[in-house]
Image 1 (cartoon, rainbow, N blue to C red):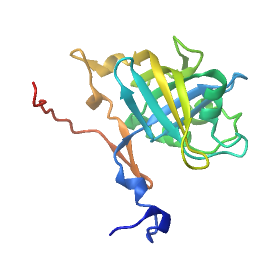
Image 2 (image 1 turned 30 degrees about the vertical axis):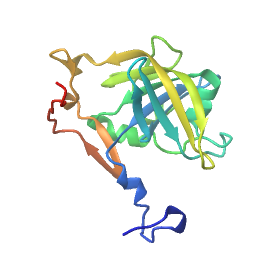
Image 3 (image 1 turned 180 degrees about the vertical axis):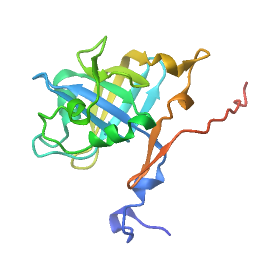
Length: 201
């Protein structure tokens, strides 16, 4: 099968959503200039640099009460900071509960029953007990093609690692089973890990 996106695919659901998979999920926490807190998952998320450490996430839809974007990007525009929480399998239902298009005054931490803590280097909430949290200051917000498509780049200024996830001096993802997005309504969990040596080692 071959199709051009502008011509359509003729399938019941968009296959592009499932082609690039698995995708890590950035559970983005923000705080508005009015002090309201927000938490939402984004599967267009990844690390993009080591030194200094930097991450990105993309927001690709809008809410009527947020001027062409969603709560996360709107809050980041106001404050210049955000926190990325890593999603574990055990919190899959709570993560899903925060994905709805709730009114901007909704605190998704409270809505989903998630314990909240304060970040150390930025004025922003984070998920207490997440396997890891990356505190970030914004480098830039880039508008890309498409009506509501924005990419947020941030530099990591603080890293929280849950103590039980650090085993033998390494952050061990098998201990907490990271959740990833596949496509449609499908997710996957990391349970199987293997090691490969690079050719130059």
